Image 1: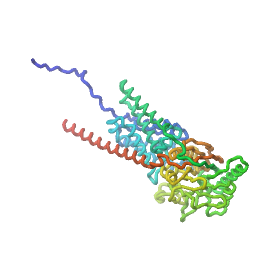
Image 2 (image 1 turned 120 degrees about the vertical axis):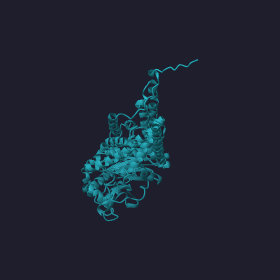
Image 3 (image 1 turned 90 degrees about the vertical axis):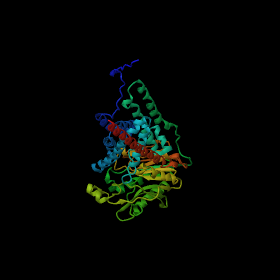
Image 4 (image 1 turned 180 degrees about the vertical axis):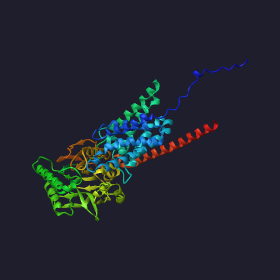
Length: 539
């Protein structure tokens, strides 16, 4: 039988769907800027924590399937939109330059995140289910880098620090701030996986998007399953926080050194009078903030005598935030000194700040920095870093002391707990900043309290001061630019959470996965490039 060739109707032939490209640039650029602004409102003073995964999703969508340089540019836009307003408090009294340089440096690291997100697009396209986890590990890696470089890093603006009121905060008890960041970023990855445009076509695809959306809600809610509270649990102590205030805000608070010291002495004497009258409980420990005595009380007999009078009156040791002269010429130390009633300073129980702030408390590469701005010479002495954790034995309680920005660094806080701290204390001076900065810092204290299962407190010269329970709840928060004394009975912790025990390893593991994903993307790209060259050769 003869065979007759039948021509196929071109209109009925199956048509291969072309590979979808990235979002149009006119959409991607606004999406990147929106990502930064949406992330911003997740942090104090706005505290819309649910915005954090949405911001993550916007940046992931903007960078997906773009060239690496374009991804970096979009990441930079997102970082600038986040950090410029988040760090606006840095320009209140120091001028524009520090604010601009700090914002640009932080945005540059987010640019690396954008570049990495673009680079790993082949991995996501091949294994779509991996997009949330890939997003999570890239965010953790970005924050790990920002927390360490340059000059010791600046961990402000970590996703974990936006989750004070969220269920995800409780995950800190299992894996610290890195695990909280990972969960938030995974939720963002699930959001973008649900909404990515080529996957929306057709009813089946629309229904398939429901799964990732439900999973995102589940990831954000799983923290409710994590038990939190004081680790171990032991005795109780009564602690008073003295917020003496300063005559006026600004960099010249140092010119008011005697007035600031007098404010804290007088507030403590008033507390002692109230205790004697039965209006307040007898404290076991009184905490003064950073810079409460910028007159070196170890060298100034008058300053030391004033502190001694306050300690004797209140009948409790005072943890005094003081600036000490030396040890060498042109050097100083930022310290927490335990001042015992009747005995004076206990130098065996003194903590010296281990992470002075570069370009604020000391100037690295001073000659080079002076070429950029002569303002660096306003830092007349370089603060010398301490060499041991802030574990202070106050008798009734062993305190884990960190000073100001140190609360943002995982290891500095963890070292105090592994060293025996039963209570976490953050001594800080917010007189050169504003209430937004103070509330951002208090949000970090909330993470640390849950992470280590320790009741915690923040003592500020001007506010915000207050107590944080081991479940992350804030109590007795003071107002800003006011004088206040707050006291509370706290339960001491003597055990360790899982996060304390595992330490840095969750972060190490997640960063290692991020490196593996980046390397895997290189392999896929090389294979794809080879396949394309083969097709060109055959053609």
